[in-house]
Length: 203
Image (tube, rainbow, N blue to C red; front, side, top):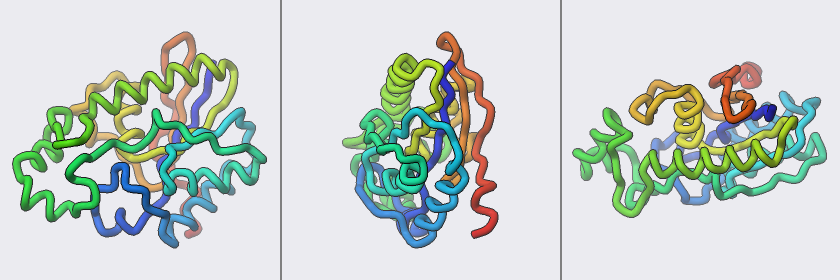
């Protein structure tokens, strides 16, 4: 059995501004840094075999307090990088809604059918993320592994683990530094925790 802890990164300025982030490499803001410290304290006594992170700075910075407390190196992992939002990256939601109304409507109401120019689909994300999970489960049998990644990755992966297709994307909530847990045994998954942010109560 492999146990996974899946964490969304902390807040950035673009989260507050409602911009599509994707592969643009932006830092955590002040609130995001406090969130990262809080989630680091939550896992300060955990027994983890490894910590993997999306290579983007906002994810690596969220993972860093956990790694520092446990003496573990953060391993960047391209397979859990954020969705490539193509031509939408860096643009505000309001701008995209106004200029690409038909595509934006797909994003809001049928995200599984959306193909952004120059970007990935949710199916693309799902294929690379699930392949990465299969590799990690084989590599870390009987271990507990922590992953820090992005909202889209968390939501798509949880849909997969729950046996849902990507049309259910918006039915999975993922707040900043949300903690999720699941186990993989013989290729079968059991989800034990979704979108827990109890570590943020003191902020």
